[in-house]
Picture: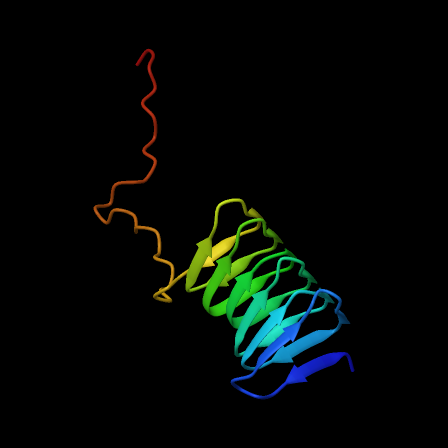
Length: 141
């Protein structure tokens, strides 16, 4: 099984730029990742991607600081902070989002700090008037 897992809740883990991982990375606590990953990251903790990080996969963590290159979706339960010079190709979803100047971002965002449901469109008028009245035709009677 291609899984790396760290279980100490307050631990600070570092994987430097000479590290290459294929598979799923799971951790609690805090991880600084500056290497290459071909797979997903899943955590209840904080992920810090370094300037040399290259991630091809989805990220799901409590909080994410993004640097380097990411090709995948990012979901955070607290905050996503995208630093300058980051290249991100994927969708992001978080209650809070910070994007610095100089970021390349191609994707969709969903930022919903209050976790509100989308508001429905207004209902049509109840006075019996049709939405699209029939046009008046000019001509002979």
